[in-house]
Length: 275
Image 1 (cartoon, rainbow, N blue to C red):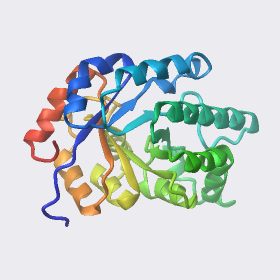
Image 2: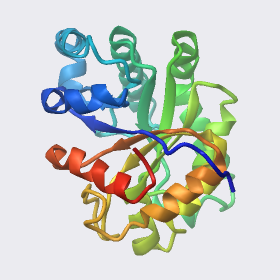
Image 3: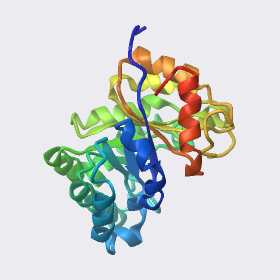
Image 4: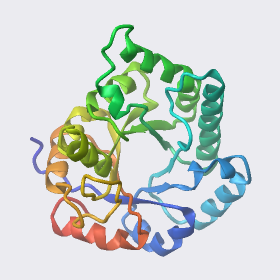
């Protein structure tokens, strides 16, 4: 286990409208920020440049690492439908356009793996390989463009029951532009509701491919996005696993109530796991 490692610095996720209330906190610690405006198709098809201009004006004095949550509503990146695949490719390009204009270097996208997949990936006909092939067909061109832009797609677990599936998918690209994200509440849901491993196992499975974490507490029943301490996620075990891996992911608090960000950060700091 890694020893004498500096405590990692927390960041946060939020829509741009909530950022002014947290700007001092973000700035004083050089904290990471993940903007969540660009998940919406209406914005991506509309005046996204206006939103970028607002963000750049607001964040002019902030020196942290900037990412954005990419689009995900209404599709999977492993879709079999060629018409939907074209939509997915366009959404990924729109996200890259926004990231490039913002100066963001990380985009969160959603894993295609479902609970149903877990029991069916090794059926006859090689469905495991087919999922990976479909993802390459959907986002392969976007990954190549991300490489050129210096942007990294991080694949976030949603229903994933075996964290090694998502790892294999990310590794299949052989690209510095594809790495892993872990959402602690999603992993805890999978553990409690579907028999997946505990959250710290997801961290160890990701290893040095882990570039991003959504920190949220939950009860294992629903996607709560509570502040740490409100649910049953074992954050001490998660941070211990992070230290073991040696990875240095962005650690972004993703809370349903963004007014809880500073108190949640203070709670994790009091535990001695982060600053």
